[in-house]
Structures are given as C-alpha cells and as structure tokens.
Length: 59
Image 1: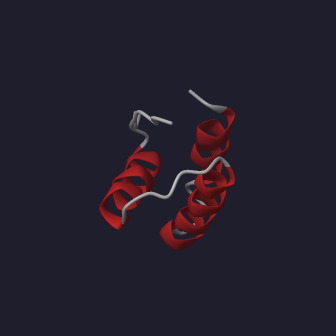
Image 2: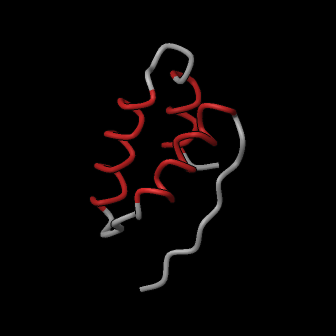
C-alpha cells in the first residue's frame, strides 16, 4: 500500500469524497496520470470503503 493510500485511509473518516477526489487528481497528475472520471470515482470509493485499488500505469 502506498504512503498516499495510507494517508487517505487514515483521514477518510473525517474527509469528504470531493476532498479525496481533489487530492487524488493532484497526486496522479503530478506523476503524469490523467484518470477517467469513472476510474477516479472507483478509486475514491475504494479508499473510503477501505478496499485496495490496483491499477497499471503504462508509459
């Protein structure tokens, strides 16, 4: 589990989904990844539910 996921999970009970989404967008864009809305929604949902979300980034 990445440090970002641990941080999001540790604060997910106090943090609203739109804040998680904003932080995820910033984080992924900083490494050159532009998620589709449905993928981003699934990622945020998995963090809020405490599930692992795995994806492959190809360069």
